Image (cartoon, helix red, strand yellow):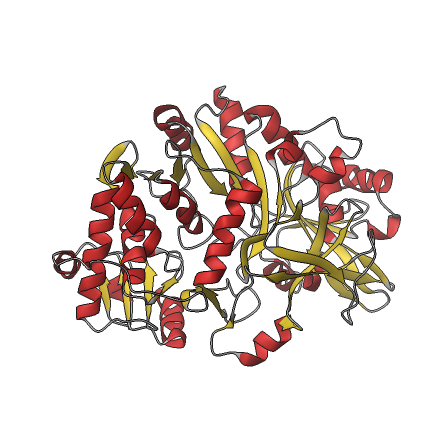
Length: 508
């Protein structure tokens, strides 16, 4: 199923329904949205783009992003979403690796590319939209690739994840089944990058004929989001945990309760217990957690709004700290290092198989074989499953610290440190140690005394898990999707600057 068929069908049934908004201002209804995509598809086809080709989209959040995606799919080609925050040289690497036919960009990014680009603010774009529209999208099969998503590449060059029509359909239907229903009167707000999690939530809202809202700022501004919630209403949005924290802080500071926000789906990094408790207390039962990765987008597990808000179940706290249960289209297991399933409660690598799992890595069979084994996608995430099927993630396998032969999961230590009221953010990493193999080091954003943090750890976790050093910094390094770059923190340990304290609070 070509996803452009969903737009085509909605436009026929609900052509006069509002579709694309810039802030509060309506720009296109569904008939106009479909017409623009069909005209763009015809223009691209006239330039030689056809089924099996790859066309990149390298622009910030704007309604033309949606038109570009569906225009590409009208031709049967695959879209390559490139984060607008990437340097043009990084974008060029992706374009070359993908053997892209063309790049659709904006005037802030396209001119700096080595690869030919059509800017949406130029006459070439207008000429494409002046083409006679295609009558319907090119037919595609379930196994045809429509999305080539490049991983963030925090540990090396990014890999191209091949997503098929079947993968996208499975993810989309799973959202309705396991995450949230969507109604015609709803709206999806694109405050996070449309090249990532926020963008893939367009499908559900196209199918239902709901509204698509790009904030005038083009990004995440808490005051703007809360204002749009009141004026537009029934807004759903994707947000990384750091974005949720900012939104909650602003709502508290301004005395707001999130009026008009319907669903906030959070994913993309650890949501700490203190933060989600504060979020629910401040904004109410609007939160759903998704666990996925580029190789199985938003489609591994889900923690329902009931579980996020529940405080009555005997194990509500454990469930709140989990990433939920397996989504309907996939199987999720915990394997040991040789591929044997572990019993409930034991820790191993989270693996998944099912219709949402990627086809493989683009032109990288070795990486594909290392990641998908006997049909199972090895996620690289460490976790456990309880008897009720709730998955609790510990850490990425590469982030686990082994000290004196004992496994230490950084998130466990981070949770404890974040319970201190004077700590805003923290990231725990391992540092090579001649005697113990690795020792625990915490990078801290906050003003708490090291002695207080020591005592906090000693009161709640085993002594060997306590950080041997606290490094106070202004902010944690993050990638374009808000994930903390622990590889950068490990590099900083080699030549550390700033205020560095030993475990007893002495300045080193």
